[in-house]
Length: 305
Image (cartoon, rainbow, N blue to C red; front, side, top):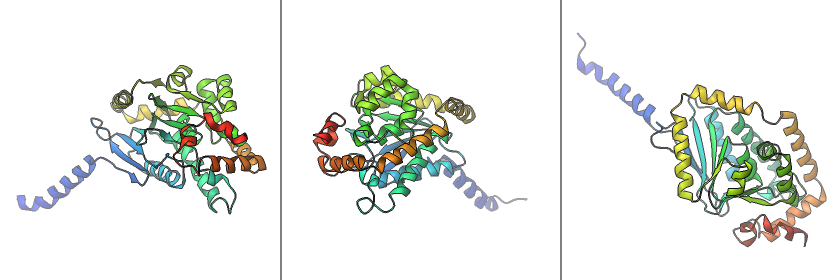
């Protein structure tokens, strides 16, 4: 007869495995921290971006976001959805660190590797089965907008501003940004904003289809996005994953995305782009929190005064 005492090790192991299975997955990086959304059985994560002072898309945020997505890619049961929000009330994700666009010795020796990591990051946003949601209530320009338009959904609060600043630097909105923005709002409106380097507010973005919906307060934005994600978490993962793949199938071609990368690279090597980048660094006081960064993109004309 099996003694109850002999079952204790097995029961202890079973308890630890059950507890482990119920423990919410957490991912913590210097510029990005996740927490499970309550009532979703840990199948929805909120990812909070914090890279003070302006959420610059710098080395740290580039590597942390890529590390997070890579971790999801290697997880047997990835979250059904991830909501990306910002701890900074003025910035969601700002432009890329312009030092990465300068040749050595002005730029770091591994800048090409970091730019390649950025390219792999947006590819993961598009290809991973997880539904990625941008909860934007601050500035998302340059790289910030490129990342936002390649997520599966975007929702905006009253402080949201979105746009592209690359034309002012004699570059193009690259890494898929121009292609996916055009898909969202059409070629005419995309041309208007990409060629003027202007930004769009939340209500206008919603009217154009740049974002799914705009909300009147940050609290309402978070509440409604959480409700949407919680409803999605009700459904089995297979249907969610298959639907994302079906929606994505109509996106820009790989050939067009690669052509944009080639154009960006060719322009980046020209003297005019490097002059504009250097002037931007001067006016922004090396990309610090101040009037220039807070005033993007309206103050981009100062690059040519």
